[in-house]
Length: 313
Image 1 (cartoon, rainbow, N blue to C red):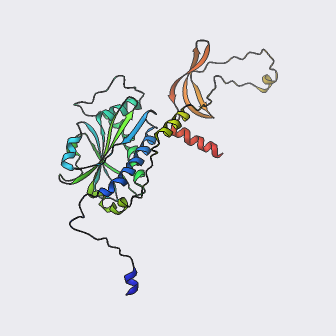
Image 2 (image 1 turned 45 degrees about the vertical axis):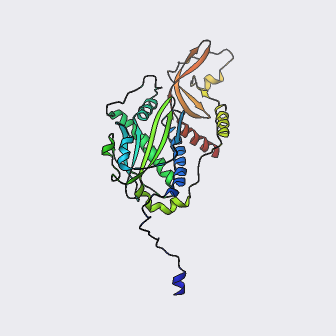
């Protein structure tokens, strides 16, 4: 009997009057998760979007009734309903129309000079296809940010443009609204992740424990200094303008003044430390030879990975 009494209890106390009341003790942990998510997502989206992208979580996190949620989103909005097993329920990931327009614009080289309107129309098939990779990257980074709390496996159910067809809870139930301000070059929009409150109740103890540390460096001055320092770092670029093949006999007969006949290549490759970065055309700029960049061959993330492999060698 004494051994049994010393064993820790495996049943958590259930208090009927307080069990389903919102726990504000969750919020610090949710804010830390949002910080991690915003940093992870920015790094991931650099593979698809320009470097001038910033993602900032909006604080405080809101707790609203589901019937009030539909009024927050305009039509159209890019709504994605996602299951997150082993949790029971569905979350809602919302890209507002201005953000969708800027993502599609900048993904394909636009600068926003000719704004694309999304008022009173549905998204095109091309816009849906362009957003598919962005949504997948968003869900991957969302799961990664939640990994210290729970292992989640996102499963996309469907996409909608009207909030009335994207219900994730009953009218009177509470929903946690996590909003993020996304800036892309000169524009942007809002990304919102809505999670039913009841969906996170099984993770109550982990959320209250606050096991997630903030991943944000709040020293803005140091961040600016580091950004400027990296931006001023120099890198050597190599461009091979011509390449010819000669026999060994011709090589032995070379003398000062020998002239080679070469063909001007239509395309040239710009390399950094042996890794191809760009493809372009070469020509003259005034009295100098120059290269006009026409295509990216390696993303910033791929360049970082390649540099790491080269360093290990």
